[in-house]
Image (cartoon, rainbow, N blue to C red):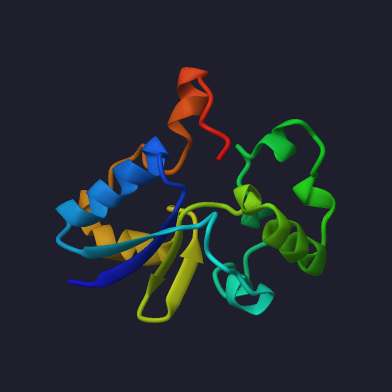
Length: 137
């Protein structure tokens, strides 16, 4: 079993369910607050790999939902600057397993850790489906 560093937004129901799925699969979780982490641009960039810049963003972030930030129109350097300034923009969770990293719950790294125990509803905001709002902090 693996030890997973899991960067989450505390109080996020979706992140809590994702942690439960990892625990049920027998993994150890080190949960960290994505909003309080002292991110450096280079370190944050490592979680995104070769994925398109727009996929780096949390589509449920208030600034994206309001249209203030349009991920489709932003380059990598600007995206990282925005995320360092406003960590709510970062797609969650960020996952690190022995240096293998990803952002979001729909990546091969996550699927390989969960195997056949992968629930279908773990990569999306619970609040969006329920039309409720997540605390902003």
